Length: 431
Ligand SMILES: NC(=O)c1ccc[n+]([C@@H]2O[C@H](COP(=O)([O-])OP(=O)(O)OC[C@H]3O[C@@H](n4cnc5c(N)ncnc54)[C@H](O)[C@@H]3O)[C@@H](O)[C@H]2O)c1
Ligand SMILES: N[C@H](CO)Cc1c[nH]c[nH+]1
Ligand SMILES: [Zn+2]
Image (tube, rainbow, N blue to C red; front, side, top):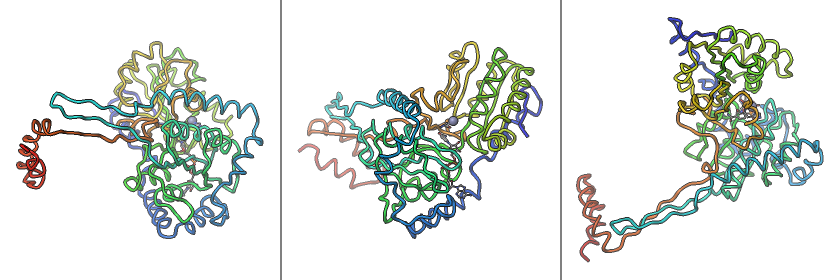
C-alpha cells in the first residue's frame, strides 16, 4: 500500500521513520546468499561462475564461453537501429565533455615556509571492473556512464561484466561498449560477477576497483568485497523524490515517479507537495499510467510497496525531509528551484525546474547516472573521473628543513612511546 503522510499529523514522525527504514535492499537473506556466492567463486573460480550463470541467468556455458568475443563486439553495431546508435554516440560525447572537466591537474608541488617540498600526484587505477546491469532490462546507457569516466581517467585495463539472461545479448549494450572503447567483456552478472572481478578466476584476472549499478544482490556483493578491491559507492535499486507545487501537470509528475519505479520492484518513488488536491491528482495519474507500462508489474510492485506521498504545509518544509531521505535523484518542480536546491545537502543529483525530468539525466544530460542509493547520498557522490583515480603524496626535506620540523616529530614520537620513530629523525639532526 502506497504510504500517504501529512507532515502536520501527530503520528508523522513514526510514519516517516517507516519510510526511511523500509527494507528495500539490505536484508539478512540477501547478505547470506551473496556471501555464499562469493565464497563459491573464490573457491572454485570458473566452475562456480559457469554453474551460477546457469542457475541465475538460465544460460549454459563452458569457461571458454564466458568472454564475449571481439567479433561479436564488432558485429553488434550493424544489428542496431542506426538512429539509436546515433543517440548513444550523442550521449557518449555529452558524458565525455562533462566528465573531462573533472580531470584534476596531474601533479601539484610547492615548497612551504619551512623549506619542505610537498605535493601530490594523481594516477589512474590500473584495472577497473564495470558492472552493467541486465537482469530485467538492458542498460546500454550504463555502459557509457561507467566506461567514459574510466577512459577519461586513463585506466589501462577496463573489464565489463553484464548478465545475459537466457543467453539474450542486447546488441546496443555491445555497441555501447565498442563506442566507449571497451574490448574485455564477460557475460556474467550478479554477485558472482562481482566476486570474479574482485578475486579473479582462471579466465578473468582480478581488478583493483569495481564500479557500477545493480540490484540488491549486486549492491550487497560490492559491500562485501570492499577491502579486497575498491568500490565506487552503493548504487542499488533506483529512487526518485519529486518536490512539486500545484502549478505542475499531475500527469508529468506521475510519469517522473514511474520512471524510477519501473526499474525494480525494490525502487522507491516519493512525492512531496504542499497541496493535498494536487497529491490526489498525481496519485490518480499514477494509477492511469501504470496500466500503460509494459513493465507494469515491476512498477506497480514498487509503487504499492514503497511509493510515498507526503503533504507539507509549505514547500520549505520539504528541505529537512529531503536531507533525511538523501535520495538518489531529486526533482524540484517548483517556481524557484535554485532557492530550494541551495538549502539541500543530501541528494545524488538534482533536476531543476519543470522541464528537467530525471530521465534526461539517465541518458543524455552528460552528468553521471550511477548515483548513491539507500540514503548513501549522505556520504557518497555520483560516479566521476576521480572514482578511477587515486592521489599519492610527496615530501622532500633537506638538512635545513628537517632541522626546522624534525624536533617536533621527535617530541611526538616520544609522546607516543615509539622510540625508533624518534631516532630515525633525531639521527639526522645536527649533521
Ligand atoms: N543507482 C544507480 O545508479 C542505478 C543505475 C542503473 C540501474 N540501477 C538499478 O540496477 C538494477 C538492475 O537490476 P536487474 O535485476 O535488472 O539487473 P542486475 O544485473 O543488477 O541483476 C541481475 C543479476 O541478479 C542476480 N540475482 C537475481 N535474483 C537473484 C537471487 N534470487 N539470488 C541471487 N542472485 C540473484 C543474478 O545473478 C542476475 O544475473 C535495478 O535495481 C536498477 O534500479 C541503479
Ligand atoms: N535511473 C537509473 C539510475 O538509478 C539509470 C538508468 C539507466 N537507464 C534508465 N535509467
Ligand atoms: Zn532510470
